[in-house]
Image: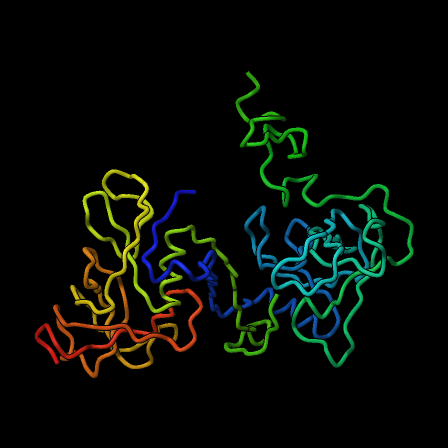
Length: 207
Length: 163
């Protein structure tokens, strides 16, 4: 660090070393038709998705099939039990979080759905959560149900045996896991780290 | 996902839900010794600038010379009064503006400085403000080393064409 010459008036006072500069953005979130249907279902403790013409069911619904771009006009109720398709153990406390660490955030494929939702897994030690684990929704008390996904407090193991052949949404048809590379599903083996250039193959590497 | 309360137009889904959505970033920045000294000065009601290689005084202080890019290490006291070099009148203050009443955003060249810094100037009306008007800082009662330690600037009643 360079030596700074201060005016006399500031030589014997404690120096400022950091400053808080919070930024706040005030939005009004408009749910839209499909999400409104979903959230209205939540107030009735039902989980509503929408079915695309090809048959796939999206939860939460966004009003259109992300692969085909076509409207998803049919509301479909899906189950309140599902399978963990991916999860993350959170070991760090961060600003604004009220969760006790460690906790598990997971992608859960509800029975009857073709898209995972993200939610908490509780009532089980974090290190026992695994892909394929069967879980069920745990709702707030009826008086506290509101049109928010937080009306489901968390998911917990429901005691069924693991789904050892868990289906990862997007694995079979290119939806949900980003772009395919040369006709191959984007698994870890074919994705190159863009920063280091390590690993995988990318389009144009075939030559 | 936010709690959804209000609603407006009707659709096939019933009424479309809406809710406030506030995104907040709790940034905390380290200042380095130069900006740190400037902010320390605000806390102590002292305004400082940095002396550039060519002898000019830059306020707020710069860490590097704008021409030669050398480290600037000599901080000198300036002000506290200064002169408006240019300004814009705010007719309808926004919620996040520093003053509730109409005011001027002004570039203020402090006495002893060769560059101007931005500040909000309180004035009874647009006709009271002019390029060349003299201003002095109004310090916040509680200061902790941030730019808001200057509550705003007020006209001294001399200079310029107004007041």
